[in-house]
Image (cartoon, rainbow, N blue to C red; front, side):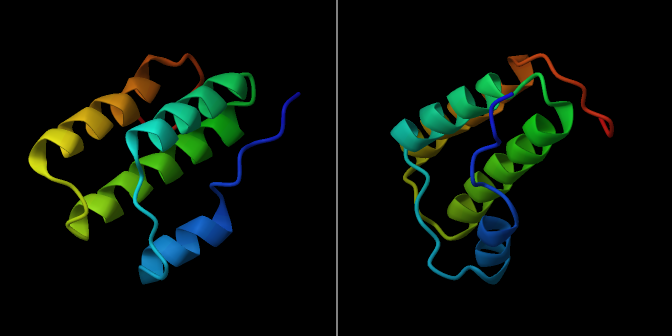
Length: 91
């Protein structure tokens, strides 16, 4: 089984504190969605990573990192994780 991408506790801590927040680009979002797809057989890892990706995007929006069109494009990529089949226990 493939190991979960590094969107875990370290990134969430940085996002929570808004320290060194890196803008989630379209290319990065596409890669993160692909990473989630690759670990979909591990429900817990996939769901946790999906939550982290969504939170990262929200932090970027809150920090004013996007113009409207770019925000829409990245949002559509990020929300595409809902099409990946894995158990989400708190839906």
